[in-house]
Image 1: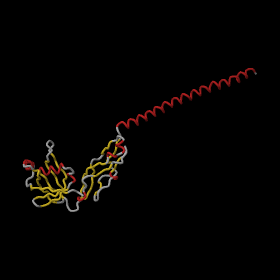
Image 2 (image 1 turned 90 degrees about the horizontal axis):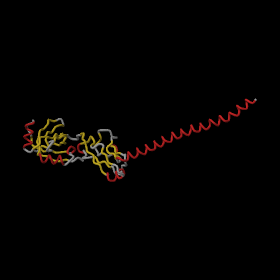
Image 3 (image 1 turned 120 degrees about the horizontal axis):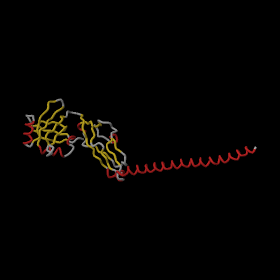
Image 4 (image 1 turned 180 degrees about the vertical axis):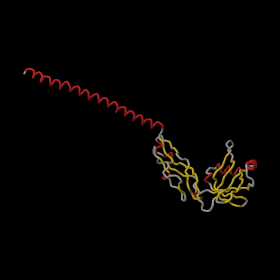
Length: 240
């Protein structure tokens, strides 16, 4: 079940960069609510409250009830911008959610059981191939994250999207066979296997010339014997 949080907002009658800068100087963050075939609503939010929501995690998969002067808007964040230096929020876009809406969301992966993985115990490393999964979900069933259990993975084994049980009302957008997590071997393991294969190939290569040398030697031994057998017969013919 999706988490729903509350945020209080005030109306922001003026748009534009100048008005947005004035809001930030006053300790507020400009934002907009759009979607559901209704006109956009420009608002501003308390900087501290918004910052706490963003840095609490899972901000883009959290539902919010925004209270604007007593009117409630059910929304989900779709995008936000942070100051590149000071990391404070600059702007937020919220999508208004209608009754029974279904939306696409990018949900993070949480890996569990790494310490129990046989592959990890043998020196392997858990490699997260896709850190997020694109899902289509009913708004009341948006998962905060998708949990992936790797406790039984051997080296070079993987968990795919179709191996994971998704919550009710949720389905994948991308192919179900996409790889999520794999256990990769330690760096030396591949080199040792290659070294063993090279040694076997070298031994096979050395055996081939030895067999070739034995064959001419056998042929050379047969040739004088055949010549010696023919010589007396030739001498006997001359006496006659």
